Structures are given as C-alpha cells and as structure tokens.
Image 1 (tube, rainbow, N blue to C red):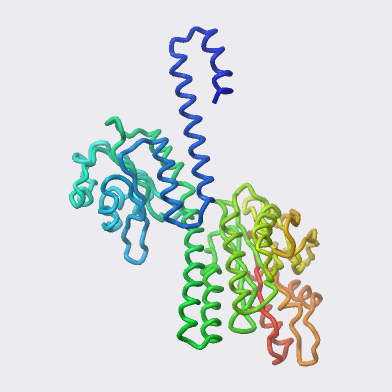
Image 2 (cartoon, one colour):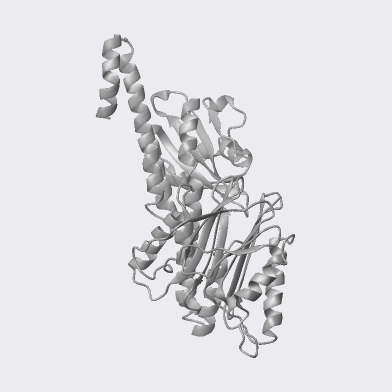
Length: 455
C-alpha cells in the first residue's frame, strides 16, 4: 500500500488536484477489495469442510461490503427448496430453520433465474417475501442477492442484508458480491466429495460391526468407488465426445477415471490404476480423485497438478501407489496437454485411421516417491481424431493358453474405429478383449476412456 501511495502522491501534489485525497482513497479501497477477494480464494483451499468454508468466505466478504447480516442458501434439488446453510447476524439461528421454495421471494427468484437482484425498498417491491422477516422479527431495509453457479446450474444463493450507514446497495456492490460467489460453487463441490468420503468411511466402520466383515467391506468399498466416478456423459451438443468405463475383476477394484469441464472450452480428464485391490485400493482411489479435483485450477498444467497431488499422497508414506495419465483438452483449438506417472502408453487415433502411440515423458506413479517431477506433452486433435486411455487390464488380458491380448492387437483394433462414437469404441473393444479371452476369467480390472474431437 505504501508503494501505491508513493507512486500516486507526487502526481497529486504536482498537479495541485483538489480531489487528490479522494482519488487516493478510492485506489486504496480498490486494492483492499482485490486483496480480500484473493484472500477469499485462498480460504477456499484452507479447508474441505463446507460449513467452515462458507463461514470464512462470509466473514471476509463483509470486510469489503459492510452489512448487518449475510446468509448462504443452498438448493435441495429433491424438494426444490432453499435452506440456510450459514446465516450471520442476530437472528442467524432462527433463520436457519426456514426453508424457501424455489421462486418464492428474492432468494427463490435468484435461484430460479440465475440473475442477481438488488432491492433497496423491500416494502415497495412485490417480489419480496416477508416470511423470513416475520418469523424472526428482523427488519429488512435493503438486500442484495447473487447466485452461486456451477456448470450453468444454480447451486444456491449468497445474500447480504441492510448495508451499514443506511446506504443503498449499488451496481458496484453487486459486482463485488458476484466475485465472492463465483468460486463458491467449486468449493462446495469439493466439500461434497470430501463429506461423501467421510460418510463412506463412517458407514464402513458402522456396518462392519453388524455384518459379515468381508461382505460388508466389499459392498461399501464398491459404493465408494462408483460414487467418485462421473454418473453421466456429456451431451451431444458438446464439441467433443467423451466416454469411459470401469469393469472390475472382482467386487472392488483399483482402476479409476474422471472427467469434467474446467471452463467453457476446456475439459479435464484422467485415468489410472491403483497398485492393489479391495478396500485399501478403493480408499486410495477416493483420496486420489478428491485431490485431483480439489487442486485442479484453470492455470495449472497436468504436470503441475500431478506434482502437487503426489506430494500430498507421498507425505503419509502409503503402502500403495497409482499409475496415472491426465490431460486438459481445449475444445476450441484441439490442443491437448498430457502428463503421466508410470502408466500404459495412450494412443492417438487419427480420423484417417492412423494409430499413433503417444510417447509421453515417463515419471513415477503417484505416491511412489515424494518430490517427483512430472512433465507435460502437447498434442493437437483435429476434427475426428480420438485419444484412447486404458489400464493394463486390456493389454494383459489372457486367453486359456495364457497368451496376452497385447499392444499390437489393441493398435490394430483402434485402426478400425474411425467414425465410431466413444461409447461404440469402448463397447467394441471390450467385446474384442472378451472374445480373445474365450472364456478365461478376467484377472485384472479394466478401465478405458475415449475422447474424440467432434467435427
């Protein structure tokens, strides 16, 4: 701040500007607001517990937008109601017992439309619902409500009430609060995954007391494993076609995959294989996927992400490790950045039918050794080109004569796939592998991911 004043003050003095002090104060306010927004972003990564995250964000937000009360309402999609996850102010506890249907009041309208609303005279605004005020006796002079949005869907709303000094809320206030709300949806998703993992762990501890130990562990671990995988594939309107499949050799396996949009144009994807099976592998997989998603940021490369995740996993000196490939695909340019840790060689299938093994720079599996380095390789997918990731359950599948399917068969098969959708490629590949096995039991888990740039 002193450096800012040192740069601004000479100009003010030399110019003899009567409003110099006001300009300085405005600059100082903007810098303080920017620092607070940066602090909020840092707070999002300081804890994975949802309530703690939201309380920290609200307290920081109130430093740049002084108000009497603030609240976060999350959307219950089953009941289509908003509930108060966090509410500050003198009536916070009474407010938290209230649920609002989507469409009711200002908060309900913001959740319904996804548009921010400023109300400086609630009594004269027909959209305002006095139900919360009546139930708590809290007098509302004005309020500002903004949506919390992730992937185009409203996850909840952030609302502040009664700007201090009896001043009205302005368009600048709206922009500031929207800047606070923008990263909250990602933080809430990370917290949900963490809570899901904690819930699964508690469920494991509880059920093993009353069920047969082995059966209970396998059922719960299988649920943990599947809950961390994407449940739906992208729509046909996306400029890419991505599909993945996991088929465990037993009830619980160690293979995993994930994909999700980082922003409007870029898709993150990953596929890997934990070095064990059963409960330990399922829990290790869950932790790895949580870290991969929680630490991924728009400005991180896949190699930087793997280095950060490896440092976290290796810090506890686990008995397990995981081979992995991950990447970021830019749907606008086709540029794809890949990084790997001890995994099978991916294949690039051109629209012409040419199949190219991608020789990525090799690194150690995740958690094998702390402070390992991971490297980035960039390839470009033209329209109709496909990237195929897989685990060694494909290439090491054996028939009754103990012959392996092998990389050669896989490469020849992929050469016949141009024009097929990602789902069709995966279905046909599994059929080809099972026909080769000719009744021999599946000895290892199988995971496959296909990503094609659409025409």
